[in-house]
Image 1 (cartoon, rainbow over the protein chains, first blue to last red):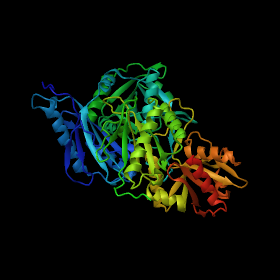
Image 2: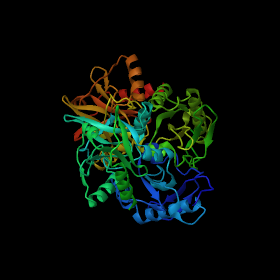
Image 3: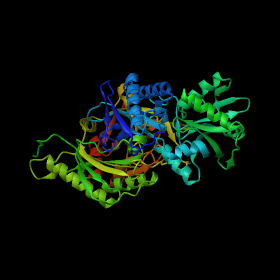
Image 4: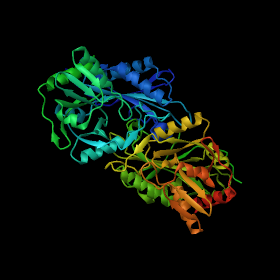
Length: 305
Length: 305
């Protein structure tokens, strides 16, 4: 079996936003300028994609969301072929450089991140690149062990009726989510689920970097419907597509906090962590469901297609 | 009078977050890494400071806010002495390199920007730097000619009661404000004023990158009180300090949209633009006040101290 002799350096490819050549970037050299909109304004979009067996997974859904995010921020439309080609080359490099044998299916999982920013103030040309690097250890551990989760108001409530608001964009503006995660960790939790107070109770939104999926009895899956404060999840969508074909009843509709406590199980699903079962929600331990292994396999198979 | 023979290249200094040496950075070389929190999460804080006559203005208030922003994001406390020293050196370089004579008081105005990010994922050490560069032409023009402003909901409403929310931090998360400005320009406006619907009418918050100041008769100045959705303004604070000493009655309290239409004049105040009079608010032209020159001088003197 292949084992790396090299330190796990990321593979970085710079992508020309208007269809020019792609080229490998030395990861020990910075490539982002001080006047890049990503740096000065967090003004850009990204995707995080799981790489397994030498292949970037769930690529169509990531491409679709990346394109929607770019449109929402009035960035140029990403050239799908070019991003796919750059991803394939980077993943191939990554697998080749980490293995003693020639079978990419044996390469460890990796995380591919696409970024496109509005670019340098002085040029106005978007900056775009992708990175491929190992999946972090705590992500792998949370897949296995699950996560303790605390609920919190989002703090920012996003209006649906503002003409310029990029509700559906996955932007680089994650400072608030990072603050929420720091706070959660300081309280002994691993993650947060955002909730919103309503007349019907605490409505469930999403995790800091994940979608919430609730498993109910009789093979039912639920997730909060995307909208203001709820980014459409690529992993959740892949899961619902796949599970529906296998007889699960899948619905995106409002979920309230009380329902999470009563569910068979609650999961945070996202690209690289795939799924982490919520083992504790606020002060309440959530019991291990009988079908835990089945759910894991369902999600893993759904994203592996 | 001094005139530049050189292209207006920015002066960039890298600042060691824990008090190490400062050093000049070549502006033609990128210095921000692909895994810097500023790039991946917009996770950092900044200040924008006006440089005039070879001196960075209103420095105490910028230092105080920079320190508050860092604390709100759990970043290390900026070393005030070091930032002041780096600013002085950078400003001195900037003036020297743009002049034929030796009198920095003749150097054109410049914009100094401080940035501190959470740093590279791989090192965990904050990245910090400052830049000094010319004030943009459209900023100078708006000072003279004023701005047409459209009001819009913020889209994001910020809750005050969330334990981890960095309400008072001036973070790099400006993608939404940039989207608001693009939308305003597409509608024929120069800027926005955010408002929030309340039972008492549209409450005025702030501009996209400025504070709102309203001038009323009998030498009265008003600004919305800082709080969720309203960042404390350094220029507004300098103005109120200075004007109070000169007999103006200055108050920070709720302002509603209807009051702006009836004011003697309305201004957007911020560090580099200093002040831009609102000449049009939505579909209504705001008349030139008798004391326009007096107000301009008041603000200019306030920030020039």
